[in-house]
Amino acid sequence: MLKIGITCYPTVGGSGVIATELGMLMAERGHEIHFITSGLPFRLNKVSPKIYYHEVEVSHYPVFQYPPYDLALATKMAEVIDQEELDILHVHYAMPHAICAMLARDMAEREVKIVTTLHGTDITVLGIDHTFKKMIKHGIEESDAVTAVSRSLMNQTKEMLDIEKDMSVIYNFVNEEEYYKREILGIKDEYGIQPDEKVLIHISNFRKVKRVNDVIETFEKVQREVKSKLLMVGDGPEYSNAMKYAKELDVADQVLFLGKQKNIRDLLSISDLKLLLSEKESFGLVVLEAMACQVPAIGTNVGGIPEVISHEKTGYIVETGDTVSAAAYATKILKNELLQKKLSESAFNLARDKFHSSRIVEEYLDIYKGLLQ
Ligand code: GMT
Image 1: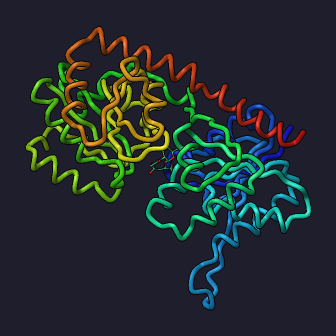
Image 2 (image 1 turned 90 degrees about the horizontal axis):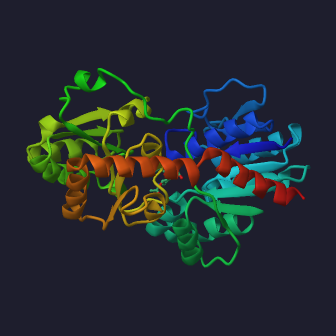
Image 3 (image 1 turned 180 degrees about the vertical axis):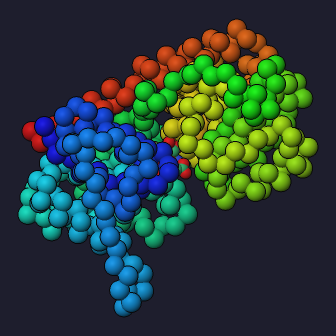
């Protein structure tokens, strides 16, 4: 039995989901899990004697101009390493979590191994601000093991930071008990979707990188050919712009802006096609969630997306901004029941085989065990 500390951003986001689900699955396998985070991870819905939560509290002493969160986290990590006798501290994101883990390792009396998982934002930050380059590089180089959620992210990290260190690619996964297609009657009707209408879906945090206007533009072209509705799920900075754009393109009546939703599985279960047209995406967990619910996807040729969508087998890949091709592929799928069924089945099979949670959990466990030998 291993004792594993996990640090992530506990709020909504793929990295938080992966970190939490991983912890819960490790606990199911008998390992003891200690979440060390600023708030209760939002997906932590399991009661288990193997799962503990240590909250990082930041003092707001007036002398500090900024609350010292990173230092409070490092101190908490060091405390937990010693008190709970951790073997592994697994942090998600180098910035600042790997650096905090390093400080904790120096402070703690017990020897602990640090595993850092890269999800992409470290690299996105670097693309904008090179101030942090040395720090992120240091966090990666000084970790005992580093994993990246796609080959593309691993290569990009090595290139941008000029890193020789070995890294492993461990893909993301979904909780199969939560993500599966449900036969649900009535929901379509409640949303005002006609039985003969196709449903396209986009799910994101509506940041600029998600290019939500491209999703609306693609849909505008699709609905000229196929009777359909678009579900826009999530919230973020571009939400109201997207609403305006839907009005501008005269499709506001067919685009349902649903905001943040908890039950993604049921929304995917009534969907025929997923669109993820981002300009940056290290993996695209929402695509995998869709695949697990038998929904094929159209995604852009960026980052890890082509490692998740198998072009012409589980969906289609288009260049960023190419809404004409995205719409052409979408129309082709939605007009051809047989093709849609074939893509759905292959998407489900790929999610179940290449990205199955049990396979991914084993890959992480192998990394931990390798470090402790
Ligand atoms: O995409 C975001 O804005 C959220 C971010 C996160 O921290 O969850 O997502 C990143 O990590 C996910 C889990 O590994 C990946 O599926 C997303 O592709 C990645 N986002 C980007 O690279 C933009």
